[in-house]
Amino acid sequence: MPEPSQDHNLPLDRIDQAIIEVLRHNGRITYQKLSELVHLTPRPCLERVRKLERMGVILGYGAIVDLQQVSPGLSLLVLVALSNQSGRAAQKAFESTMRACPQVLECRLISGTFDYSLRMRCRDMEHYRVLTETWLDNPELHIDKLVAHPELATVKNPAPMPG
Image 1 (cartoon, rainbow, N blue to C red):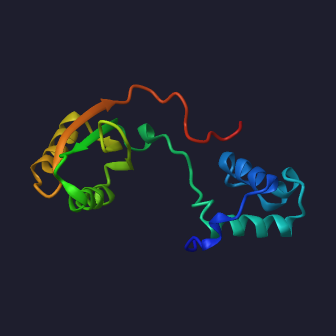
Image 2 (image 1 turned 90 degrees about the vertical axis):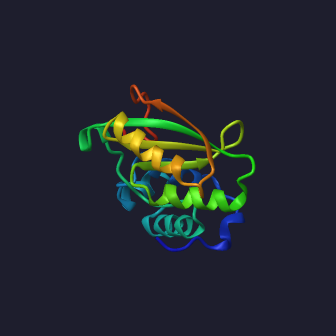
């Protein structure tokens, strides 16, 4: 995927919005079928998709995977608070550690009582405990508090395929 350009201030028209909506639900659609759905001929449709990719509106394409079937284990939502005195260096160290950790599927900076929200996948609670203890023992991270919420069931996936 190319680097996003500085075109990101351009407004998206109704056709761009329609393309985005179709691709959110079916990233494998052919350009022929996509062009029919958004009422364009294939070439201008392809050019619009490429423009949306260049702008960084479309970040990539992927499959929605049932993680329980791929790697049985535990999914968790983990809220993380860094100490108030930690500063930007601790944030950078924490974010770098999260990017490098394969068990962390998502890491989001949030507002409120906690600083970060993590989606994690671990073999079991012992695996989670050992992993997070290494984080807590790392003085560069300045972690004040971790609160884990094990996932019980998936009610809605990000973008379900029609079917």
